[in-house]
Length: 257
Image 1: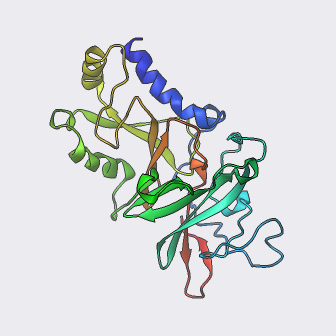
Image 2: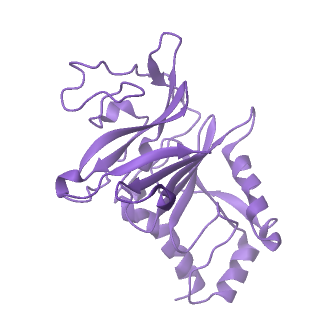
């Protein structure tokens, strides 16, 4: 396999979790994402097919209206898998809400999610905490900072000889609430990697760059840069659905971006 085919294989890996990625472009983060802020769901009639979640009070039924976006092309992992709303606390007044498939109806272990030091972690209930994987890394943006600038800062973890030879490039395929892009080698570095590893996948630009072993990408939001770690298999969660909620002075939770 040529180096170019290896690179194409990495990009095509993202399509494993949804058949619709090539048909929908990313949402422009310049849009007013807070214009349709949704109050937390009430605990009674607004939750006919689920139950209120403990942090935000949102309904657990995975209703698409709870999220900034959803990818309707994501296929169920198995016939008895259903979408459920998930939440993790980021701070006393902020939570990350998203939808993920619950396959307990198939007899599978449930997936649990937690937040630690900027990372959304996920694991099966049968797994110990220290074996949890990473689904998302959250980078809060400083005033005037772009997500691309935040991504470039992560090059301090890249090999010394690559730090000045990586760049951000938009990705037109993935459907996300913000804009999708990657931190990838420039032409000279890519040519070098293709020559050095002509018949095997390679990694470049540090842990937040590109890898031949898994699908990963960046997303630009108004106040955050998100680094999606989708892995090698179809993820249980919908990457398009990540939505930040903030708690108001009245105690109600609403979309904040």
